Image 1 (spheres, rainbow, N blue to C red):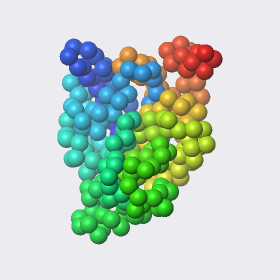
Image 2: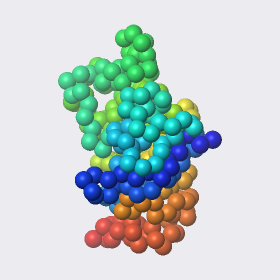
Image 3: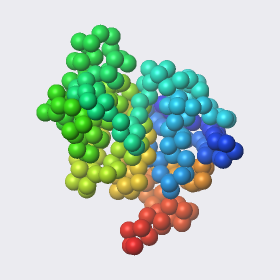
Length: 244
């Protein structure tokens, strides 16, 4: 069943085209990778899907319902949550309070929201940090807190914007395993923007490649890895960086 259906979305800023006729779909309970060079339009597409700003053209459907141009809070209530590249927790608040704030979107009353937040924190592996201020968390801890806040909205679709960036390989592996476990346990669908190709290939059932604001290719991880256009536009660039 198609949960997210993006149809012909275009978006420009001051005459500069960020997205042009982008279409993609995410099936319920599946993980879809979204890759491409910096400036390809990945975060802009996330912003359109999550309601940060409306597209100039095209539609966004969630579970068959047209949510194009709805404000962020209304789309969040329909089951879409996201993480951000630049993490901005409430530094002076405890980890638990940070997640409780997010849980208020789904639960009325502080006691219910706090209880839900406690469960999320324990599942994410931050229970021992629950009462400590978010400011003391390491990068890996802040990544998990960002994920916990998104999960506290109890989404059906989770938009992950470079959730693995800045982590060392051992930290990445643990978080990748956690993401897969959460997907299997909850059935949440994930749209994953990531430059760590090993993670994209491991987690994704299907991958879309953006280049200059357009969909360059889509397919299974193996199909994308062997696509000459993708190698020239993106994967070759990654290999060049690794060799330099």
